Length: 82
Image 1: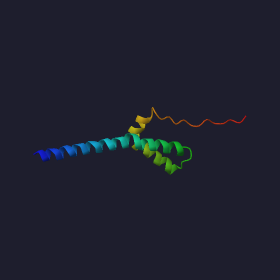
Image 2: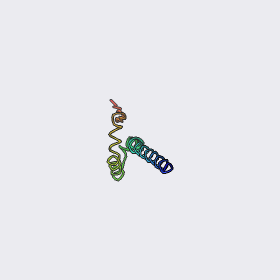
Image 3: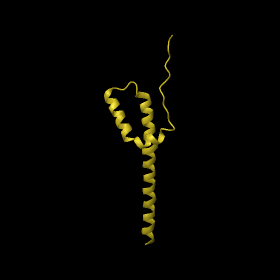
Image 4: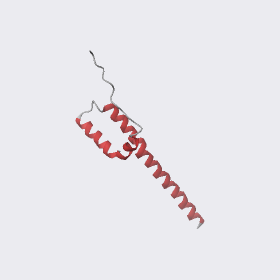
């Protein structure tokens, strides 16, 4: 019986670590990469690439919402020639 309890405890820790890893990946890592991708390609993307960008925003919406107060990518200031 003790061996069975040890096996169940090891599996429980493994499942908890798997859930923690996947949640960090989904809520922090992938949305951060999506932010960087959107920042670099937003103004030069083709229509197909823009549709792919919208899919990424829809897919990673909870993580993007979580990172939005921290990351703020504003457009670069225009240079006006007088």
